[in-house]
Image (cartoon, rainbow, N blue to C red):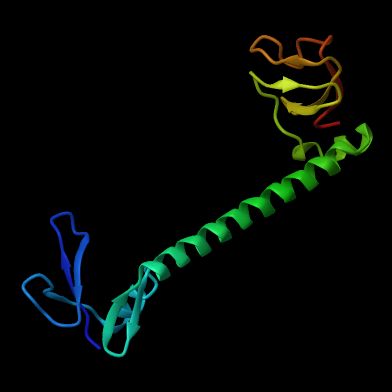
Length: 151
């Protein structure tokens, strides 16, 4: 089957046809025709390229569900990692220091949170909102140094 395509000035597809017209002058190769069926709502019926809004909506919904599932799985993995890290003893936390988040400004830290800063691991000993001049190495009232990275 041959498919013909017309392009607008921005080179976007403006028309599709199973025959050449003044608006559909570009003949697609077989591989390109198969790719068209991957587009939302298009399918081949006999020797015609067809479009279905229901099929388009269905493909969009399926794609969104897949994206949502991937996001949920990623969130679950992050939660599992966080739970694992939160339950480690300080001694074991030092062994996997690279897995802990780096210290950041404008962040709310709770008692017990552990962060990396300049190759060291620190534990928050007082709840606070971090500020530029309250780095873990400069404010012992907020952070306890657990270990130096090369020790």
